[in-house]
Image (cartoon, rainbow, N blue to C red; front, side):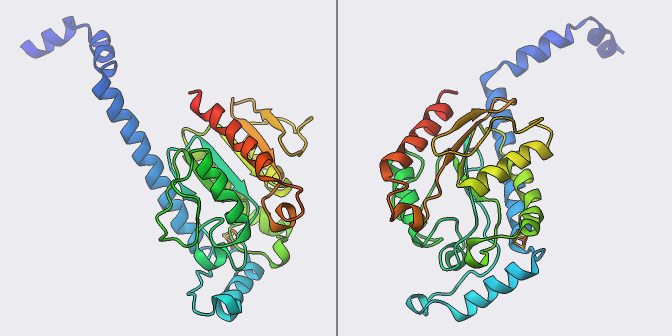
Length: 265
Ligand code: SF4
């Protein structure tokens, strides 16, 4: 009874405010949010790896993994949908097109083991997002800091051309991934298909009423109504990098800008 009387007279709200303002409390909340993001992304990746929604893509990836390229005859191909990779607390998300048949479809990690990755990771290393410039396999020790890498389609498509229905099948995974990245501030879209896929995500989730003037161009930067920034870049495919359409200097500038925005928190 005495306790009840004491509670009546206690200024409860000021007490709570005092507790939550303590650094230890704030650290605990941040850690709990971070652990929730880690679990959500791990659970999402498990579902992606087991996905069979696109019959054509699953058959193609399985067939490529069985027949292999001669240069990788001794390599045990991944052959399944490729999960995202990186830092669940990331402020920057890279969205690519799809795994390469003998790159990510072989190694099981985005942009790992092919020409696009050989162009991308050195730039991520120079801009402080990657722990090393070389990405050759899932167990090469690569770690990303403040960055997550994903794609609009998680299975390698023939000719690098996913069908509209396949893009639609994979879109819910992008929605769930973006929702799980609670610190996200910048999305870097590699290529027009990724750019369109991200804009469709914002339309689907009600974060963007209309596309308006947002068109794809290398180096384009748009601020979304929710405060996040969209950066567009040419895709680092060999077709673009071997022809000089995309140079390292052009690519560096995009990721330096992403870093500037992310680190201005
Ligand atoms: S592309 Fe996406 S939706 Fe289609 S099978 Fe692969 S993971 Fe599933």
